[in-house]
Image 1 (cartoon, one colour):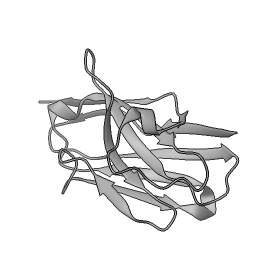
Image 2: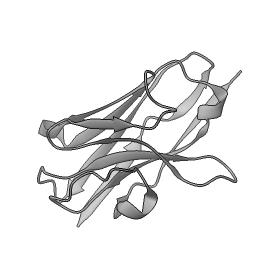
Image 3: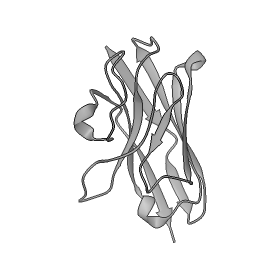
Image 4: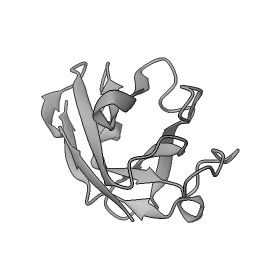
Length: 126
């Protein structure tokens, strides 16, 4: 089993930055596709970014150029660096993982991921 603990959210003003962290515990073997999702009130959960164990990344259009996903296998942690934050980035952010050795999907959709963190709130004020 895999447990994910996401953290690092907070309240910032427009243009600010935050770094989210996701610590993986339980089965920490490398070779797993990791992702960040977000969900704003009244909206569907949407994919933000993925990263595989080799460091290959994909981003949603809304994240390109502003967000960077990275992984540190030595400490079993995935990060999401978010810069130039906007009010529309306000949401609960969730870390997610696929089963071991499953490739990252072409589209970052909720159904493709099995394991989830509890979420960390990001609020961006104008």
